Length: 263
Ligand code: SAH
Image (cartoon, rainbow, N blue to C red):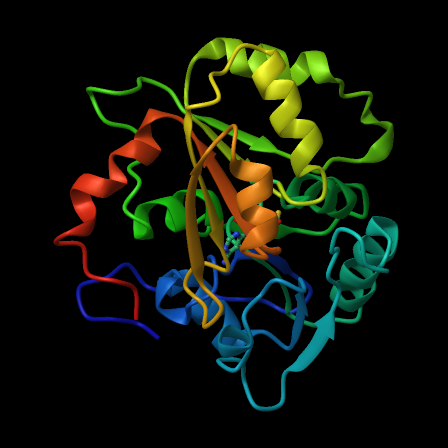
């Protein structure tokens, strides 16, 4: 894996856990470090969202352990995932914990890192290309431009039920007046849109749903905040999707004439 003129790839010693991001899907968006980790690991504990094409890059004899947390479906408890990582590392395996996007962006990387620390296990973090920024860029939506925004909000639509979040939290985000890139928007789409409108965002605010970016199922649906819920239903947009709200969505029109599509 070492490339001429590049810093050498780190050793992956037995008993270590590497928490790595796999990017939004297409394996060409992996980092070189994630590729190195895939080619080296004994055990790969992966999320449901990690693309099969990425998992195909593993060593032929490496073990795949699915551990996806997926909203709305039965999924292993976070404690059980932590336990698998700890057990495998203690058994002297080189454990790659592979997550969609970036491990520390709505990816529970913190929970797992904390559990590893409590168990006395050393770990490395390999950042990944996060889905929100990648999906937006590939659809022709710049996260920031000097003309439109000096900040951008990354937010999660679907959260743990008991976190106490309320419509006021969405209203507070609306009042920032900055574009919002929303992960996991689909399960509570009508509630979120209503709260943002009540918080002061105009019905005409441009919005786009970006489904399954960089995969075969990729779809882009442009709309406005007021029409979003109906348009999403009519077009049968499903998860995983990113919702982008704000003036940056309107810039897409200007880029599309010369923007080369993905693939
Ligand atoms: N750690 C991940 C996010 C995990 S939360 C990251 O940094 O990207 C899961 C959410 O990510 C999904 O509900 C969806 O909102 C988003 N997502 C992941 N992959 C995606 C893709 N290929 N296209 C669109 N959204 C995606």
